[in-house]
Image (cartoon, rainbow, N blue to C red):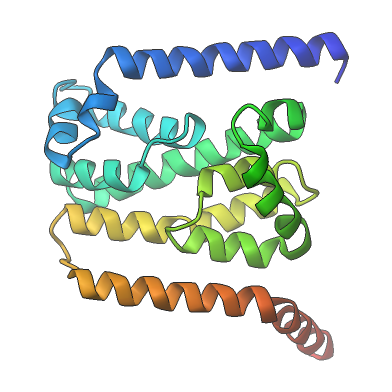
Length: 226
C-alpha cells in the first residue's frame, strides 16, 4: 500500500470510528449501559428499528471497544428472545472481528497502537504469534480475555484470514450464547456455578497453553499415519 493511500485509509478509519463513538455518546448509550433495564429501554426506543440498532451495537462492541457485548446480548435477549439475539450478536461479532483484523493487517501498528495499549500488546502479541490457533481458540472460548483486542493483534501476525474467521466463528459464540440464554431466561446460572465455570475455564486455558503444541503435534502425526 502506497504511503499516501495508507495515511488516507488510516484517517478515514479513525474518522468513522470517532463518529460512531460520538453517536453512541449523543444517543445516551454510555449512560444506558450501566444496567440491563436501561440498556433494554435504550434499544427499545429505536422501534421499529430495534433489531438493526441492536446489531449495530454489537458490531460497535468489537470495532469501538470497550462495549460489553455480553451485557448487550443479555439486553437483546430480553427484548427479542434468546435465538434472535444470539444470531444477531454472532453475525455482528464475526463481522466486527473481520473488520478490525483486516484494518490491523493493512494499516499495521499505526492502527493497532491507537486501540491497544503497549502493555497489552507486549503481553499478548508474542503468545499469539507462538501459540496462534491454540491461544486464540482458548481466549475466544473464555470470557475473561480481551477478545476484541486479540482480534486486532491477530491481524499483526501471519495467521491466514480464513483460519482466523473459522476460529472466531467456532469459539467466540459460546460465551455470547450463554449471555443470550441468561438474558432470555432460558437458563439461570447461580453465582457459585459461575465461579466454578470460571476456575475450570482458567485451568483448561493454562493446560492448553502448556500442552497445546504437544497435542497438535500428536494429532498431526496421527493424521499423517492414516
